[in-house]
Image 1 (cartoon, rainbow, N blue to C red):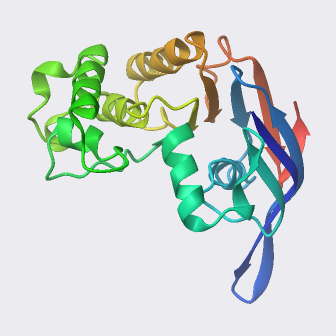
Image 2 (tube, rainbow, N blue to C red; image 1 turned 180 degrees about the horizontal axis):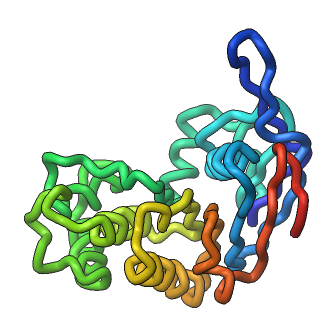
Length: 219
């Protein structure tokens, strides 16, 4: 499903070149639950963004379902992301002046259809947020906001969920709840790639990958 070959990403910082990813080659099979771990600055987030078509690598290739993401136009790549990939971030990225329902519908590729609205309401029910559909994100706890972010990522029924430290700001109980939703997605046949410093997902992961200084240090 996901294949990275010699993936390299460099940045310019204060006049110097910084290597974030250094020739990373990796294959993730459909239906895997992969945990990516490593110290801060090891390239975990860069890898996740590159896999998801959100950050152009300096060299190397990323293929998703056999399609080279960075050989596409930006419009084609955006369409592939919307159709196949759901993103969950540590800082939620919710719009504060929109309701919970409206925040989920932001993931719809066009003006929300009746089908998209039905799906969004089903997700609110599934994630225990249905009674708060008209509330704003700032009326929720951190755990509820993260559940909302996961629900939004699942609106378009993606085959892949990419998550960057989704439990980093949560207490153990809420972290376990969020991991539980990823686990259910995985059990239904979805592919999960989860960046984390914690170990809460280790018991359900198919693989644990470690990055160090931009290189694959363990798989």
